[in-house]
Each structure stands twice: as C-alpha cells, then as structure tokens.
Length: 321
Length: 236
Image 1 (cartoon, rainbow over the protein chains, first blue to last red):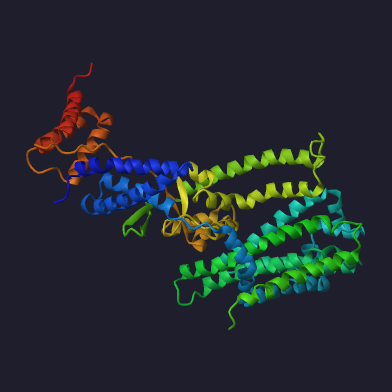
Image 2 (image 1 turned 180 degrees about the horizontal axis):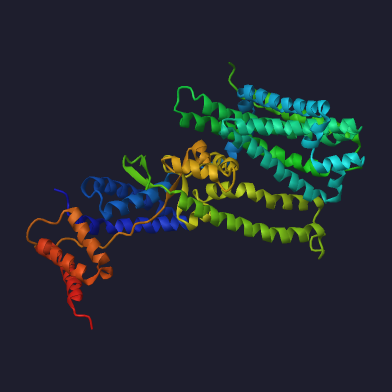
C-alpha cells in the first residue's frame, strides 16, 4: 500500500525546496563547494521520488512538479565537460585537415560546380553579348564602360568599413551555401554556380573592355582563399544533401545529424580564415601603393598555405592505413 | 502539447514538455528586437567612429577600428551560438519565454550543435519570415525547424509547477486514506474555489464533504467547509 500522497508530499517537500533553492543559486553562479555535494544528493533523491511518484501518484500535481524539478536539475547537472581550449587546439592541429581530406570527393564536386559556373558565365557573355545585360551587375557595367575599375570605389570608403562589410557579406554567402544543402543540395549548387557565373561573366566583360589585367590583380590577393572557403562550404552543403538523399543504413534523421555535424565543423573551422581574408580584401587589394606583383605573390602564397595546411596538416598524428 | 521522453542515468524517465511554434516565434521576436536595438546604437556609435567628428578615436589605429567595426557586426553571427553555449541553451528571448535549446537527451547543446542550428537560420528563413522553418516545425512531431533537425536539438519548456500544500492525513481519521487522485481533486477544488460560481462551489464542496468528509485531513475539511459556507451566505 502506497503512502498517502499528502504524507509523502509533506515529508519530502523540504528536500525538494532545498534542491530548487540550490538550482537558483547555480543559475546565479553563486554555488559553493559544499553546495555541490548537497546538489548531487538532493538530485538523486528527487529522481528516486520521481520514480515513486510515477508508480504511485501518476497524473497528480506532485508528479508534475517533481518531473519539472528533476528536468530542471538534470539540464543543469549533465553538461558536456569544458575542455574547450584543448579541444580547439586539437581541432585545428589535426581534426580539420583530416576531415577535409576524408571528404575530398565533396570538395572536388563543389569545386567543379564553381568552375562550371565560371565557364557558363564566361560563355554566356562571349556567345551572347546580351548575356552581359543580365549577368553583369549594373554598377560594374557603368564603371567599366567609363574605363575605370569599380573596385576603385572601395578606396573612397575607409578600409576598416570595407573590411567589415566584406567579412559579413562573405560570411552570409558561406552560411547560405552550407545551409542550402538542406534543400536537397539545390541551394548549395545554385550558390556555387551563381557565384562562379558572376565571376566568369564579369571577367570576360572586363577582358572585352581591356581591363582583365586590372581585375586579376585586384582579385589575386584575396581571391584564392576566399574562393577556397566558398568551395569548402559548398562541400559541406553537399555532404548534407548527400545524407538527405542517400542515408544508407541509418534512419534519415540520424544520418543527417552525423553528416551535418562533420559539414558544420568544416564550415566553422574555415570561418576565421574568411574573416582574415576580409581584412586583406579591405586593406591590401584596393590599395594603390601596393605593387601588383606583391598582391599576386601574397595571394598565391596565402592560397598555397591554406591548401598545404588542409592537405598535409596533422598527417603525422594520423595512424597509418 | 508535444513531449520528449528522456531516460536519465538515474534510471528515471523524465518527460520534458516541448515548445510549440508560437513560443518559438515570440522568443525569436524578442531576440530580433534586442539585436535590432543593438545595431541601431552601434550604427550611430560606429558612424561617429569612422568619420570621427568629435576626435574621440584619433588614438585608435586603423586596424583597431577595423577590428571593432568588424567585431560589432560579427555579433550578428555569433550572438545566438554564444548565448546558447554560455547560458545553457538560452538566448535573451528564450530566457524571457522560459524555453531552452536541448539535445534529444535533454542536456544543453555543445558549440557545434548550437552553431549548426543557427547557421541553418539562412535556410529556415526562406522565402521570408521563417516560412520554411515554421512549416517544418508544424509538420514535425517535435516542433523542430530544419536547423534543429540537422543539429538534433529541440526546444524544451523550463516551466515550473508550483507544488500545492498537501496536508498529511490526520492520524485518527476514519476509513482508508484518500487515493492520490482523490487527494489531488480536493487540492484542485481548494485552489480554484475562490473563482467558482457560488452555486457550483456549494454543490461541489458538499459532494466532497459527503464523500470524503471523515477521511479528509483536519485542515482540509475546515477549508472545504469554509468554502461552502462562504458560498451559502446571501449576497448583500
């Protein structure tokens, strides 16, 4: 025979109230060392009380209140351990390059989509002079026809403003490219082809007006890294799409989560590179006093450094296969 | 209301209530308002900084200014994840509405999970005003938007149920003690009686007294009797 509910509640109530007080203290970050021990003890007891309430007092307010109390305590007590500094170092030293190498198929597909866009964009402008009407942005067209580089406009705004605008803009492109994988990859593919197409169309349009050299010099400093990060974000998006379309042996949701986690790790790991390259694009690329060959050389060096890191980084730590 | 069942290491099944799309939308609006207010302030401060009308910032190097400007606009991307990771799954709006992000086992999200669900805002927002996210949450049994599905997270209500004052049964009471459901019924009557229509209060109170009168704890019996008596007084 179960204990009458009133007696049970009256007897156990002080412990529940104490636990609730301790949780308030924990939330306010005022928990002392002796409190931790009490928290552990009181939580276990409350969990035992909940088990009992589920059997003897199901559907009563005691049951509901205990469930809420235990849920609150459980959420506070079971957290992931905090070794974030070490985890971050390990991530950049070994995990990120290994991840990119393991998913190189997707990186290759993503890069080819960007290239495809580039070729299609250039062909469209080459074959159809009208193509330029739709593909090349209005502002670019106007300044190219006037014989000046629209990128000179970047000089009119202070570099810090340009740098921050470029960095947030690039982050938006990368986020959209990755998240577009959720639309069965259509969003990702569209973002890659569209960005490639824009570059191809503008490039050929500039070439026709004899300004290709100036464009290439402008792009060379930041372009390699920027496009690489977009390709990597595209690869991550394609991983998500692949998991959606072909989940293999796992349920679709579970496979999606596992693959999405790996994809997101690539995107987030590369986001800092994108922020740094925004600074280059704001300061170095438009600067008239930096000679062209310095821009080309530094851009190539940054690109080689990035891919060298991704392809070779942390290899010594990997077990030989 | 949708619920999430969680088995804890203590071998107890917790039953977490999930937040629906209404609560989620309200929490988003609170967050969006907070971010918008920050940006308005930041815009004025930063335009001061860039043009430097008052000469406050002349000691800053160009790079320092760039990092500051970039940093403020970066908040747009890190606000959600930073809040969710540092405050146990709660942004300002979620705190205001007493909900939190949780993994499917009820624990707070890690950096990666929080980042995934927030990166996917770009798609959930499509084509406008989170239409895709809302539709997904409507169809999904756990009210998850696409970002939640990808990260494996849910939004859990952190509501607190106040425990009513149960009276222990009187030691010498006649008959068996009340069953939990009966005791809960009496508590519910006593808590809600002040809002009842007098006739209904009298009828219900009398039935409770007739049926359980002798078995009620002393304090409860007087309280029910008082509720009936108040209802019987002529209105004057």
